[in-house]
Image (cartoon, rainbow, N blue to C red; front, side, top):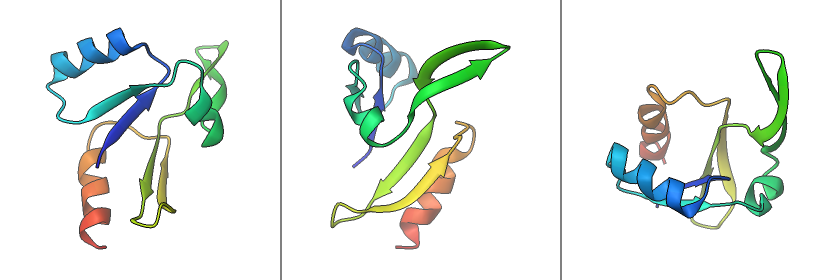
Length: 90
């Protein structure tokens, strides 16, 4: 099962999913409950501007509910293939 989670609103997720034709569920974590629990919400800096946000991270969770692999500082290009290789090796 693939789930996408971000702090964006449900409405924003619906538009993004439709625009990109995504086949998986997107979850709105507007209160940062999940992102705080996984340690991916916090201070960021882009072009000298500091703000709080999510660090793009992928967690592969095994059938027992344990984190089996973590991909940090994810770039979208090629990442799906990288995750698919890990899953195929299991």
